[in-house]
Amino acid sequence: MKIGILTSGGDCPGLNAVIRSVGKYVFSQIKDVTVYGIADGYGGLINGEYRKMKEKDFSGILNTGGTILGTSRQPFKEMIGSDLSDEPSKLDRMLENYKKMELDLLFTLGGNGTHKTAALLSEEGCHVIGVPKTIDNDIWGTEVTFGFHSAVDVASWCIDNVHTTAASHGRTIIVEVMGNRVGWLTLYSGIAGGADVILIPEMPYDKERVIEKIQERAERGKDFSIIAIAEGAMDTEEASMKRSEMMEERAKQGYTTATDRLAKIITKETGVETRTLVPGHLQRGGNPTAYDRVLSTMLGSFAGRLARQGTSGVTVAIKNNAVAYNLLSDVAGKTKFVPLDHPLISTARSIGVSFGQKR
Ligand code: F6P
Image 1 (cartoon, rainbow, N blue to C red):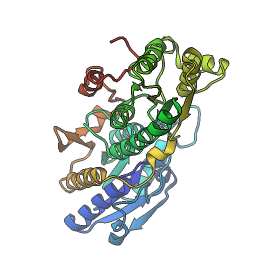
Image 2: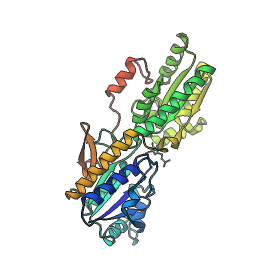
Image 3: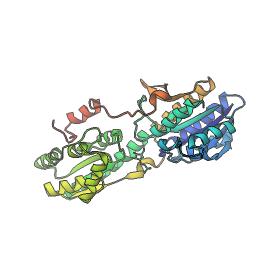
Image 4: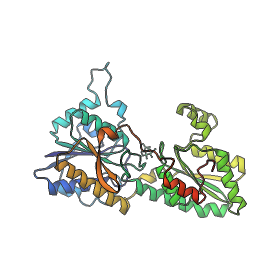
């Protein structure tokens, strides 16, 4: 059996742990197996860049961050070429290389974009098994993605550590957490780090309510506040605009991010000194946590088992706390947003956390 494996999209801790688990499973459970490591995600499949992997390549990587295969972002919209061009499209090139490599199966470890392309390859006759990766935790049909909890730990650490300095100076500190469209990472790390205000893209906030919370804390003798804001959060005014219009409006007023904008508003309206912290790609770096190592091992070995039994066109998932799978065609193009009635939101509210909305 000839198997290809690639990691695509933004990296995260746990990729190597899944690669290891898949590799160890197929080498020990499938006879006559050849594994090709494809370089830099779909980029390697497009350009025919891959190498044969030995069993020993899968050792010593359980606890390492990043990906030994490399990764790249390959936007889905660029996969299918235009009718006006005679050049083979990226999809054509991937199909050609899949054939040239004589693959029986391709493992694709990635997020939403990766799954869309995986579904397309599957529609075109390739045998594909996805494994859900992303610090955003936004893949439809799985309770959790690998990489998410490692990022939660980093973001929580950042929120934790600004408490003492905010308290010493009597400042408001805003920590910008990754997540352009979804707020899972901000919600979890905000709660774990003890943020007073949590702002996520799914719940456009009212700036008056945020200010109210800071003032209410001050009245109770807490002259500092911590805000966890998702990079894609927006206020109610911005939520009524198109994205391009919103960015234009922000630029006109002299800031580009939601965080900058909120910091200026708070300083102006409350007089409280406000600082911002953007941990950025730190949240995607470092070693996977023990939780993510266990999860990655479960997902990877299950993907191997699916390969052995000849199942493809699917992506591995966690459902009811157990490994399961979904059809790629069901997952492609969907996003798992934070539902507004999520129990963590009511839990946070019940202990006084503000989401910048009317109570
Ligand atoms: O999808 C993971 C993610 O880290 C998002 O949270 C973030 O918005 C984006 O990737 C950043 O992408 P890049 O690494 O390409 O700047």
